[in-house]
Image 1 (cartoon, rainbow, N blue to C red):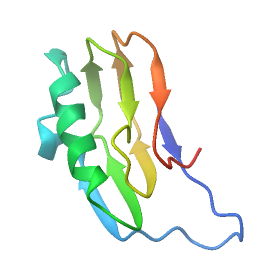
Image 2: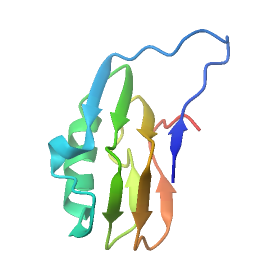
Image 3: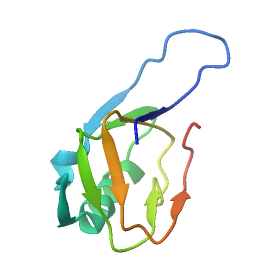
Length: 101
């Protein structure tokens, strides 16, 4: 999947208060590693942030063993930049918090 979930109603350029990378939380795009613990770590960190946050997921094949609920623990506004990414083995896809779609 190649996606960047974000929008700006006024047509202005997106700017972010926080720039995070999924690899910093243990995300591995090798197609085999369970990334559910990395997602839990990201959600915990994201819950403590305010302002607009962009999470970049490096190109790769990311496996999960639970519902991938991005931003589940709260936070303010989340944009996910994931060009060249495959999210697999999810038991669904959920969107929590204030994600921009």
